[in-house]
Length: 301
Image (cartoon, rainbow, N blue to C red; front, side, top):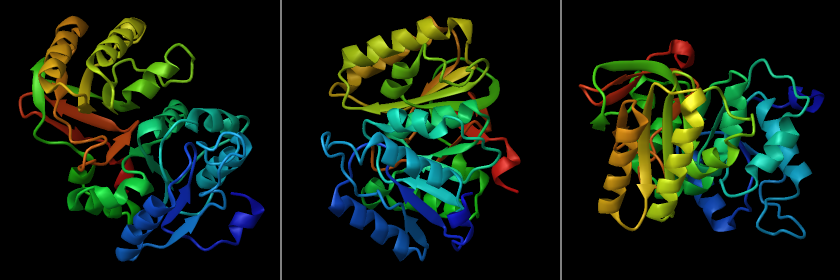
């Protein structure tokens, strides 16, 4: 915590923009959702900034890195990314360089925020895969309620668990830390040394807007790259291509070739239901009951 932050009152949610520039309307709609639940918010001063030469970024790398550092070192319960979009990894590497962290607020976000999750998970931190502020107005009530319970520290096991999954391969029960996020971002970080160790982990992936051949290509890359650190299982959330039948074929092929339990049907990602999950926390994947249940009490103290 910086000297200036010591004088700040504790807020429920700190809002920061680590990557892409933010639409003013989506920002206002997301803020309205949080305030409707009575949550106190504090926004980083660069939330709505734009890079002077690359207007698709929410400010310069240095501004976004400062926003990440502020988010990680303040007295708030949750630091919520305003949106994903390209640029998070650029800023996150700069933000975490030389930064010593022993405890952080719960960082919430998804999509390109996967890069920040991965860097923090590699350091042993637990983070929350959940909606960004700019998408709160478009997710359903169940998703919003789970977000609010996380923010208010009223977390139940079910708020960070998944039910009604679809088993593609494997049987029995699998235990492991949950890691992952956006498939495209994860693949872009393979081989960099910036990802957490996936050995015996339960990997989770979601994505949107990718044609089938690119999903297939990324899953092949994941499968080959993980030979040296094989996960215990893989869980797929929303993967939104134009051909659902073709997607089923791709995922079944991945399940057959990977040789670890694989399930689909997680209501997490870019759809209207984007359920919260705790990354780098312990989970049990019950393949008979087709559910992924939080088994780590770290968030329930």
